[in-house]
Image 1: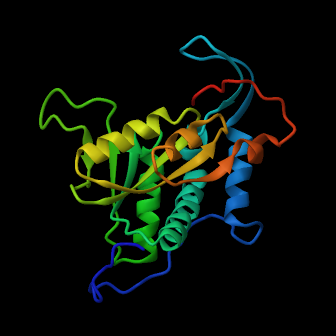
Image 2: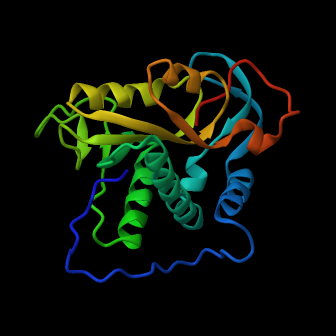
Image 3: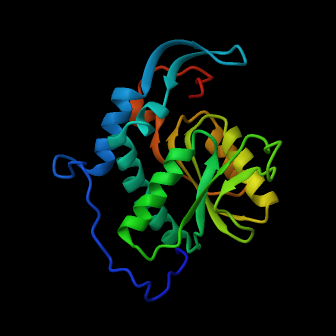
Length: 223
């Protein structure tokens, strides 16, 4: 369940307007079309580790496209609401490790507010390391100790970046409600996160993007 807003916030509830054509196809199907067209790349790719991959999913080509980001926000916000209700958990804020989570968290937060002007959902980003100046913050934005948090990520392969964000939030006094990922590469990352006790809900899987019969390498390049 989401953090309960005040019964009256002084702002009339309004319907959001946007350019996404919801008549031609469902929102999830529209988002999948954009992901397939922009973010799926086949070929030979080398990871930083030196491992080879035949598939590169550059989710940022979708999340930096205005139409794609609108869809990510709408689909993601609905998934947050549905998952929070199913798990019966409170959600105070949403974010993840920079830079894969930044635009996704912001878009979901915007659509939460557009749907309900009384929404108190906040967003944040987790730096890969704390700033060396100013307030020396590791978590930027509107996270506070005690928040029940949804961690988001664009693509999960091993789950390393997602777990890094989870560790930062827990160390700062937050609780993990659940995890939402745009694409699960089905390379073991979801299992790694769930073994730590966290529910992972992917919007899409590798099979959604390239089919169940496509050949698979043991390692997939990280976008």
